[in-house]
Each structure stands twice: as C-alpha cells, then as structure tokens.
Picture 1 (cartoon, rainbow, N blue to C red):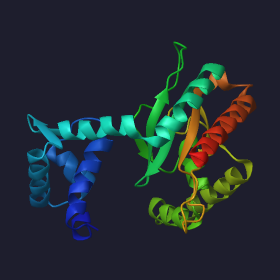
Picture 2: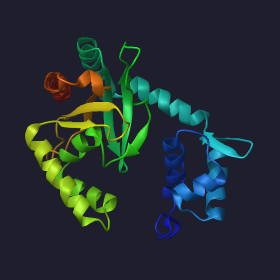
Picture 3: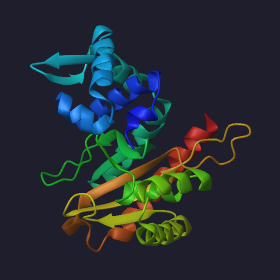
Picture 4: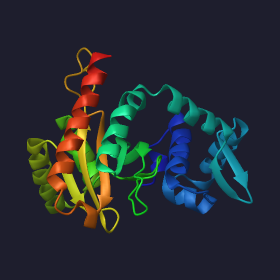
Length: 252
C-alpha cells in the first residue's frame, strides 16, 4: 500500500525527516520517493516547507538534514538524560575490556546508536553514532526486542515479519531465551567478523505505565577473533554495566 494514503498532515513532514535522518547520506528525489512512499507532488510540498524552515538543505538536487536539524542534534547531545547517565559507565566498560561500547535505542522499527565509546585498538568494531539498522537482527536489536513490553513487541514483529510466520516464530523463541538469560549475543549478523553482546537498560516506570520495556541497551562490540574465549567475561561485564546505568536512571 502506498504510504501516502495512510499518512496524513504533519506525519508526512516527519516521514521525510525520518528518511533523511536514517539514510546516512544526501538523497535524491527518487531516493526519498522510494523511502517514504509519498506521491511526488506531496513530497515536493513537504520538502519545500522543510527547506523554508531550515530542517532540510539542498545541493545540486540532493537533499540532507539542514542547520536546524543540527541544532536539534546538538541539543540532544547536551540534554539527553539517558546519554548523560550512561557515559561514565560506558567509558569504564570500554577501558576495562579495550573494546567499543554503544548506547542503543529502538525507534520506529529501527535500532539507533545514541552514543559510542571507541576501542583504542587499531582493529576495532564500531556502530557509528546516529546509524540505524532494522530492528530484527544483531545483539542490540534482539536485546531491545526481548525486553520490550509484550504488546509492543508483538506489534513490532507483526510489521517486521508480515507474511513470514516461520521466521517470526524462530525469533520469538530466541527472544524468550534472551529474556531468561538477561542478555543477547550475536556474531556476524550485521557486519561480518563483528561479535556483540547487549544488555538492557531500564528507567523507573512512570505511574500507570507498567514496566514499559527496556529504555535502551548497552552493546559491547569486538572483532570475532578477539572475543573468542572471553565471551562470557565480556557478557558479564556488559550486564553489570547495564544494571549500574539502570540503577542510576531509577534513582534520579
């Protein structure tokens, strides 16, 4: 179904901004049409409005987030309580393991990196800050899915695995095992030769919200060759770090 028939009003603007933010490089009109599903006339109207307000910039027919989008990003870096509460513990984990550590969240069926502490090794693995991948594979995605509220997880899997009940059932069984164990591990699921372990971070529930699921995940990444033989130790450190951040968030 064309998204233009089901997306109305201000959501069209947000759809365009989301496409530009997650693409990772400037987009042509053809790129944006494919990413948003909007009619061309609708897309042009949204882009013109976003350009006028400074949220989108254009160069030789290619479009990218504009200077106002940069102001939003800078404001997020300075004011994010989740990033601020996590950074020191992430630094300690990275120094102890000499590996890269990321703070990952789930937004709109994607996994997005909010913060990254890089390994000091010349050979290192990284999930670039701001990078987004589909919420279905890899330790980060599986950790976030495993610890989602049940209703949210079911709705997410409905969208991700529409028409593929066998793959969905297999992933649900894996997510149940991850939830019981307390962390997720993957090897070469997103990037070949990259091993990862991810543990959930929880905020204090707001009144009437229930548990609400994980707010984020802490993910440690290493070359598969360097993680061999020390996977359990790395997992234990990552879980302790995620628990420490959860405690800090819940006491603030």
